[in-house]
Length: 74
Image 1 (cartoon, rainbow, N blue to C red):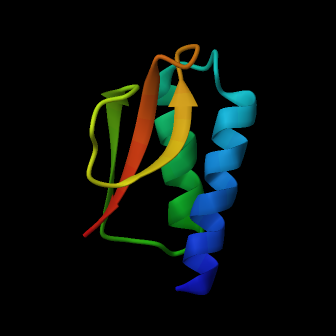
Image 2 (cartoon, rainbow, N blue to C red):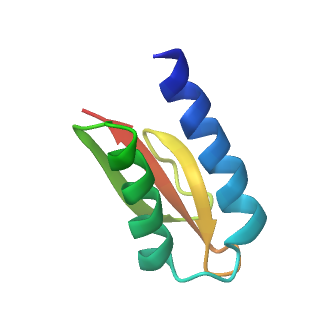
């Protein structure tokens, strides 16, 4: 669980740092590939407008900061 939290935190920082202009679907696929490579399963990634109340953890920002990718376990 500790590794999982660390992985999500690092992906969040990486997503914010280099993905502002990246298309959301491309970033979502990159994040999903990283989660799958770490053996994480039973999750969902959702693209939402920035500022939208989301039940989950923001793991990336895309389309010049106008949208966010939200991770949900389960």
